[in-house]
Length: 188
Image (cartoon, rainbow, N blue to C red):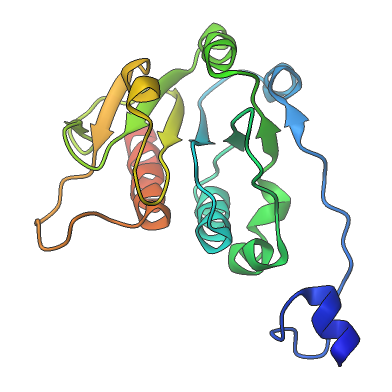
């Protein structure tokens, strides 16, 4: 039991632990080369560090058919046991892609026909009224301080999810699910 706890890095394993090799993180250029034509949605995770949020984002990404999670150049985000558990299978279907430095990443994505949409807690355009491109990267900010404003200003769109005002904002994983669903609904 102790060995299983150590291997799983948790006590939530019900007596069964599998040691699975994780697919490597792909470089952006390789992912773009293999992507093919047509509509595509990806998530750029700018400062998402909480493994539970990461796992929930992966699960939503898989559910809504996102093509990748894009990790910034300095990202230390990895698929931990906690993230994989929360993802519940989503980790297998959504590749993790390593971005070069921000300016280069944006240039490569735009060259491949992607629009970049910064997601802001407030002050962005209403995502439910915005016209979203067929090839889109949502740039998701950090859990606490939100998106880097410099990065946000370099994106093609700045979007927010309008709410009742009863709470300050949605958590990043919940917001991701709403944003993904909105893109999917526009593809119809």
